[in-house]
Image 1 (cartoon, rainbow, N blue to C red):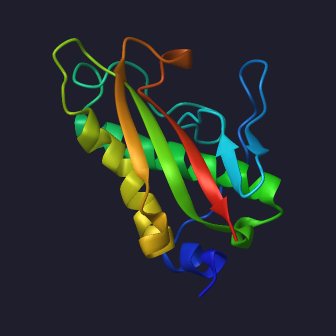
Image 2 (spheres, rainbow, N blue to C red):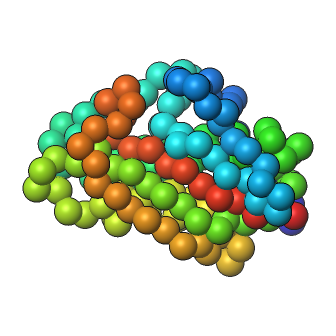
Image 3 (cartoon, helix red, strand yellow):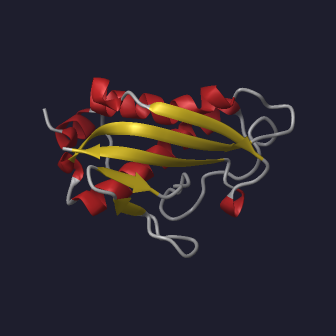
Length: 152
């Protein structure tokens, strides 16, 4: 089964590649991999929520926003790779979580991205990961995801 077929089976569509909000490119081919810039959970060009996880954003909602941001990262990578089926898996995922001062469950939020890649790529979706709590993210987004994908 191709990655495109798997995405279809999961009922997921790749969104359009989000336009950069500053001076960078959404993704870059680095040889055998594609590295994405940080992707926000934009839906139709807008954030579904803003604020800090553990304050105005629930951890469950942030988990879903991490999935959205991860899907946006996949779209950016597929655009550079020449199509979704040119991507074979994930190597590393970094998830930044805008966190309330007392919020300490960043790994559970980051699982939103990790679980998505596992659903899509199976064992090839296994990756190393960092889940990082930060004070604030661009546009006051609750999460940001950057990924290193492997090429087929």
